[in-house]
Length: 424
Image (cartoon, rainbow, N blue to C red; front, side, top):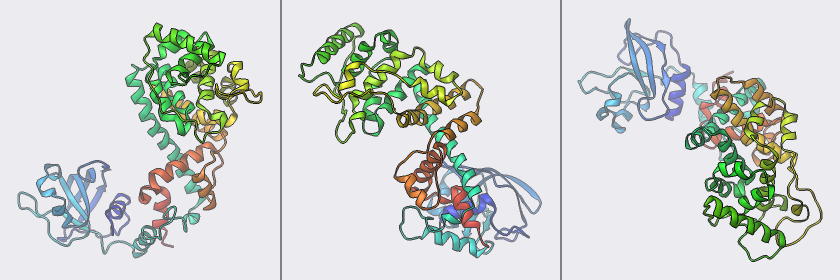
């Protein structure tokens, strides 16, 4: 038995409430289970119960054994003085308050359907697998899964909003600056994302605004600050960019630093030189990029906005070291999708709420039109009959795996709840 099950049973009232009594045989009625607390302190706040007809309001504490009250030192913590009911699986010892009165206790051990407990034990004690419920998840109704995945997608959006809020605070609510930082991070993908994000903290967006009318200066600025113009290559284009960067460095009092930017194991089209050149092309092409993105409510227009050109030098180069077969270095549709999923749509979601015009239907519409991401997590869920047909679902499945499955938080989700309470 684990405390998360006892908490689940209380939260959803999965126990026999007919002629309910406390451990001292007082008549007990539950008027409100309270608000679950995921931080320190009692497990549920502001519950309402009735004991022998007397209404009480206060907090609820959950334990497997009543004696855990003393094990956790609650008798010495003033945060627990307002606990009106101690909900336990087994009342192994009486608990007394500091004023020597007996704690009102509800024991659940003999009030729960044994099949619920058996389902829980089967789930939590499953042999080590990719996810605990992989042998039974296919039994969950597709309607339940679909609704849960949409909720999970918005939960993921809320998590991404935390970083956006932090960046807004740091930039005095300059949305264009926040967009630039997030774009730079995501242009770096997983391999260079952190290094590119660190780079965004060394380049004030006001400099991008001042220099974006000349593509070569934006390119020199980004490549120079990334430390990609420091080698001894004497290619004319590199020499030209070095000269421009030295000018910009002096003009804007820039302090470049060595960055841990990587080429190793990257495909050439993902080389940091190409991605930074593309970002330079994007900001050279579009003035007030944030405003344009926020005004668009059509995915086709979004894609078109990212149809940009880079300096012709990159048509035959991936680095400064050697030439390559001629190829336009445009942003691929799959890369545009990544930018939309990880940067543009979360920012749009946040901005809509900021201006008081939330439009969750539009957000879902965008995401449903974007193809599902392809990665090992999505592939594995597909093998378990949980398919992903859009970016909404792939993002939701990533959230499910990382936030619930990996942490064994099965009982906090609709899938685990359904598997636990299916006693037919």
